[in-house]
Amino acid sequence: MAKKTFDPNQLTVSIGSHTATGFAEGTMLSIDMDDQRYNTEVDANGNSIRYKINNNNATITLTMNQGSPTNDVLSTFVNLDRQTDTGVFPMTIKDNRGSTLITSIGAYVEKTPTVDFGTTGNNREWVLKATEVGFFVGGLN
Image 1 (tube, rainbow, N blue to C red):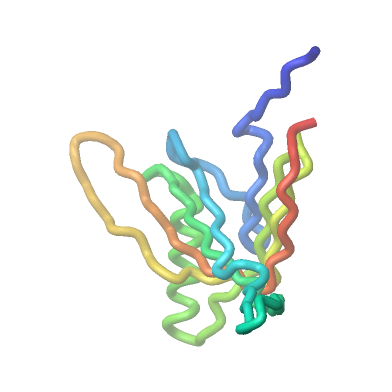
Image 2: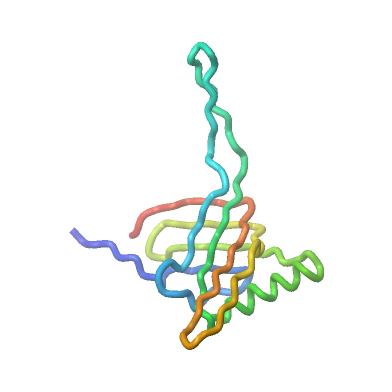
């Protein structure tokens, strides 16, 4: 049986028209949906009612190395938001070796990174809010 392999070079992260490059070693990005899909309540007789939660927002954390040009792109979106409230961008995350695909028609920078300088490279951790998320987590091809 052939082994399946994840290749970080086959992960495409599009921020507007920019393709993100310069991810840090280790966890490059994480995606966390804001709410569970359903909530359940049980009445006094033990009957369950399932309530759909229609929140399709997610928090996405990108960890970039200090020299990444993606830091400049995200900083530009932050400045657009500060000046004109127009720092919203479409975003796509695709594993080109698998079937995972996450999309958002309106993402924005929720939290800018802490900025450290030292004698070694320092990462920049950007926290983004993604709205109206399309979410498909698949396996590797």
